Image 1 (cartoon, rainbow, N blue to C red):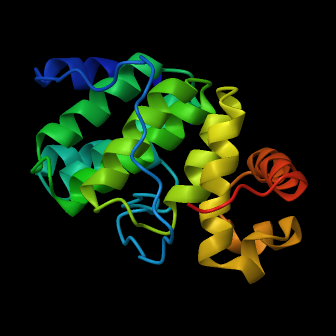
Image 2: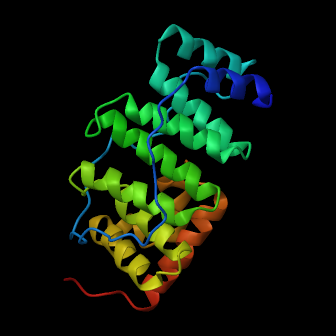
Length: 214
């Protein structure tokens, strides 16, 4: 089902106050740590309803109207909007969701993480990097998702030396896992095949000349 003009009309009618979300300027990266063992419960897709549910958009809109799980519904609608090529609507919805929570909360971290993936998959790697860095720093920067994700986006941005440095951090953390690209489908089940294939290019560059630590 398409988003349709009904969704756009309803969202605009709510009079949402939307903050500016992302700038695509060159991103300064945090200093690379030696290890990244910390799990991050916020680094997961936010879906309040199953993706294949009939009338999914209508059901999500009802949740927003009733105030039940409104933030989560906004995020899921934003992701649908991006997938359908409605980037401006997606940004507005993400902005509303972020404005409804504390900027330093776990929820905010999850919103930024999800928004970054949608931006990356729509070809805006620079903006995705900015949000991933924000999400990482909000969790003290040592989350286990950080090295492979930053390696992926930096490689896409042709910052290949930095990508290899970040991938090396993943290998230092779990050498029996990240040193072998054959492990990527198990380690990165939510990534798309093309994303895992691109990270395999980073792995090959790392294997050809592993950077020393520190």
